Length: 247
Image (tube, rainbow, N blue to C red; front, side):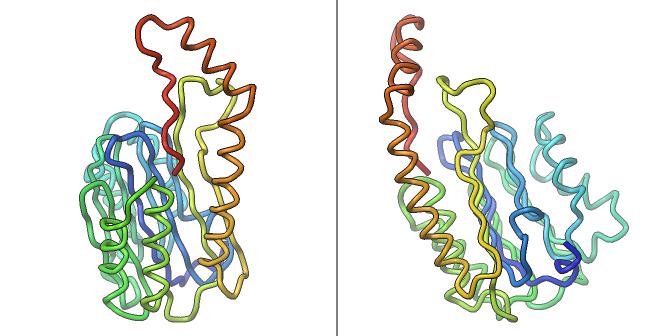
């Protein structure tokens, strides 16, 4: 984890338009980015903590989001209490899809962020100022489930230069729950990581395609069909057990 003390990282935090899925996609040079930067909880929100990452932002930020605090409130809460905030970068999307971000004055250039409807893109130690806007454009113009849109933003960031030292680590996390989920299951709908790869973003795309295929098989399984049938039988009126589109 100490390798991330001087990282160049580009990420996107977002939710879908229906406020059913929240997620984070991120890439960087050092390994283990998936264990540090992305944080998300269903119906609470998501965040990315990077640059000179303050790991405590993750749990503290999710706790504040869980209490209904806005994305802007969470950014003020976390950075306001942190004497190292000028070295931090943070992006947050809350339960209502509102976004907010922070780029400390001491983050290594190029560093900055761009907030949009239901998303925020941020990066530091990047190859140039075109990367974050390219990520935002890719997210806004890509159709389909949120994991695909997050991944498209990551591809755009990499194609426009990404981490100026090169990129070897990437991760994608999406949270969601359906009414038929077992209570013991986590809310992780997608949780993929790539480390020490010469092409981590491309490898992440390969894993995403495999994950999507596995999920299609799971959704078509007898167990899931039976869970949905029982739920529909027990529920008055139209069944709430609609299968959401796969991110």
